Image (cartoon, rainbow, N blue to C red):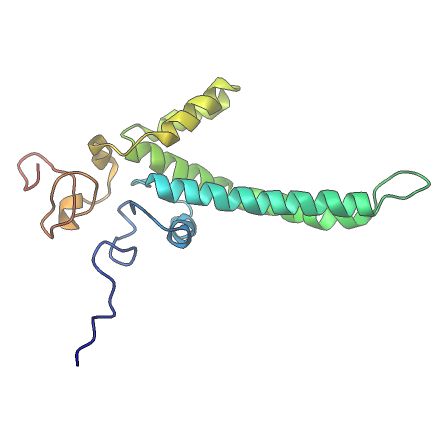
Length: 182
């Protein structure tokens, strides 16, 4: 009696090097790559990598904020109406966590812009009130572009990953002029 191989099929998170985007990343894989590429501004990040990390960080910050508010309301002095000091711990944790994810948050945003085929300098649009953040939101929703391969550290042909064309291992890959899959 033979058993099927216990190794996952090609194309899973373990097969995709960190220098390439992980298309269709699961929640855990997206968060893991977010922290593994903490301050990596070069390369690309897929939509799933970006949005899973966005969701994870939003949930953590919301939980810490709600904890601070609940503790502040529960500790209100009935005479003076001032909150107790207990809300300072979750508020301090919220501030520390927010500071800790500034760099990786900007890095994954820049890599996401690269994957859509745009320069990471477009991230500076967040400095424009309201319309800048709206523009960045729209850029983060855009699909991957073959033009984004120019931001890769290593040519995708050596790995064979990407959403367009066929690479040497049968995976999809971006093509470079004069190379297979171009």
